[in-house]
Amino acid sequence: MKKMYFALLASACWLGFGFPQAAANEAEFVTDPVALHPDRSATPPAPAPVRLASADRPSMGGGFIEFLFGDRQGQEGQVYRQQPAYQQQAPYGQQPMVYQAPMMPPQAMGQPMMSEPARPSFDPKYEKQLVEYEGKEGAGTIVVDTPNKFLYLVQGSGKALRYGIGVGRPGFTWSGVKTISAKKEWPDWTPPSEMLARRPDLPRHMEGGPQNPLGARAMYLGSTLYRIHGSNEPWTIGTNVSSGCIRMRNEDVIDLYGRVNVGTKVVVI
Image 1: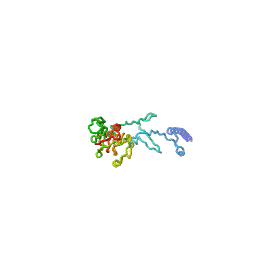
Image 2 (image 1 turned 135 degrees about the vertical axis):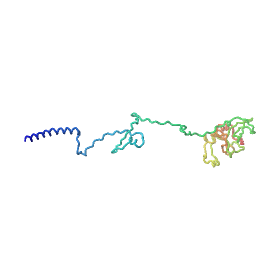
Image 3 (image 1 turned 90 degrees about the horizontal axis):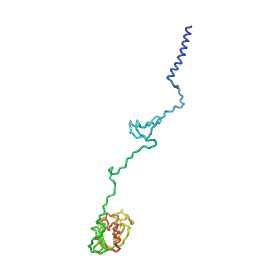
Image 4 (image 1 turned 135 degrees about the horizontal axis):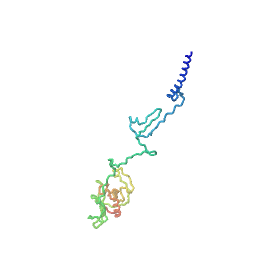
């Protein structure tokens, strides 16, 4: 009986010592209580914050590089963006510097510059000048030398004022004797029906002025449609250019206009 008593006492002592030791050992491995049956209605813990880089990044191409550095779609619609470490950022509060290439002149890019076509210069021999005159016409007569493109205002005593002129194109030249029937400053222009038939693009009427083809002055020859008139195209002097009229530079026709009167004889050869 005594042996059984001591055996029971020893077991109780061993058990009393073992339970605290086991609890201590368990505490070293389990730091938080583990719920075997968690409450599903409880609010889940908030996920760790995600660092988002700037979306303003240069394009780096597709494929594997784009996969590594591009935008990747995460769970529940979250977008994870990563910016390459080598991209230099502008200082805070400043915009990134953008380089803009300077404008290049067309010559440097191999492109020709557009310009107006060159016009022939006025030939000095058609300038107004006092010359010798050996013809038979008396002083005050106008002589038109169609082949040589000169107009003479006979002065008498073997002299004449000579002006350069433009004359009719082939098929539009003429010859004869007329008189100045009218004089007009900055005349209007109404193209005749024959001219409109050849050039339907012409205006039906044009008021006098610097753009008018009759120029600054006009002297009408008899009852014909021909005139001695000015022109805003001085480079045409010395050429066959008109439809039969005698064309002069504006400064020359103004000079002649002041020297002659209605009734002046005009000889066209």
